[in-house]
Image 1 (cartoon, rainbow, N blue to C red):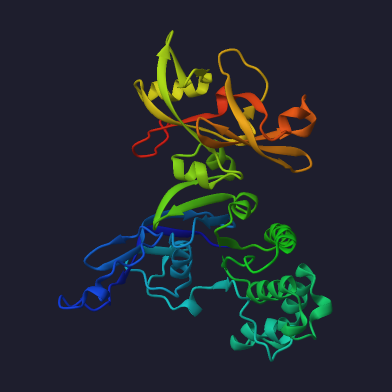
Image 2 (cartoon, one colour):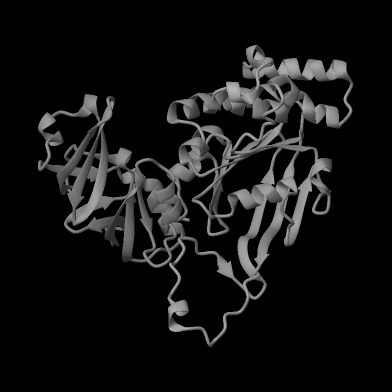
Length: 399
């Protein structure tokens, strides 16, 4: 029901800490433990979000994903109007809304902690935002009953939140948002308080929900599995900056840098030190004695960028490594951990002094001794799924 456009959005939190006195005792001058975040600090303050640009289509499901402190929730709160935009422009349906109050933006938000009124029944919680808008009671009843049916909470309408499970409370919180029929539905890590089984169920419920309501979704999570399963497109963030925007398949198959490569995919991509060389006019990746001739598409991509011979970081996903022998592409590792996952085995190998994970389908496992701790196994990479990154800046050399 709405398009959302973010142009050069920046959020800076002013530095309000008082200047430290130079005459403090040595005890007070002990170095503070370094934080894991690497946000920019300028004269104006801490840059939480920097130059964020995104065009969201009508009814699109966008997922902002990244580690804690990357700026994804801050971005969502700026769309909601809960955080002031330092610089840049935010449009909803081509209308500039930087200075529009949250209640006038026609958006709804689902929070991580449900934020239900404990003294109200489920029905009263669902009715509340509509009564504030003075919607006629007949229309309120219709919208509440429709939302309750969509979310499967009809039988809980007369209960209070304390009598509901976590998953049921989250359904109520989502229901309270959708009864307003907002143009944009914002969801800030709504499943993070649920256990693994409930998260899987609620993911499926959200997928069904977006097909039944005409709303644009912006969803924030740190869980890359949620991002991959829910999003039409994924926005991957790190240290306040966008790293890559694309469909789940695009960011999985074509990561633009080592951060995206390592963040998307579970288990994460294996990384090796190697060298990119040319042999007989073709690009070849060398990792010690092993050589992998890259696929035709990768040959074209690298040639188009005029990539020269150089040391590289080689990336290969666990799913794209095979135990089968391939002439000229052989590597060897020692099994340190063997995880039976049912349909597949995750083998943790010590290779060239670092951990390497291989996912082997159990049906393809020709020799069960490969699962034994201490076993020596040989493997190679799929030529069309090997990624080469610049070791200095982490960028994918193909793009």
